Length: 140
Image (cartoon, rainbow, N blue to C red; front, side, top):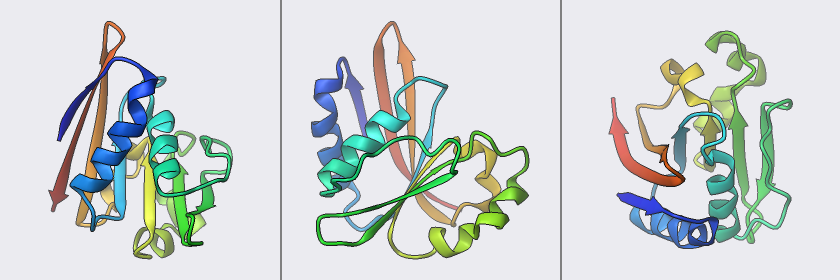
């Protein structure tokens, strides 16, 4: 799936497409430079899932837990502050990554070696204010 985004007003539609394109997937790894819109897109996806909590980047907490409209947990990670992938062990990443619940990761490149064998890779690139979102499944 590849989508061009010209404004944040398009994000609810992008979130819908992402969830419809990958209806059985629960692990979404986001990649992109600082300020490209990873958190903003994750917020739109969470809203589509019925999350009413305040969705924000868990930069300092590393993980935020939200609830969908039916009460299921959604795990949102921001690994920006990690110096080594091994630090993810301290938060018990495996319990979350392999829970079967929605997991959204930011700054995923810092823990790429720990990712499940199968996930959706979501890359966001920006050029002159236009964002290109490329999503594809990864099977290692």
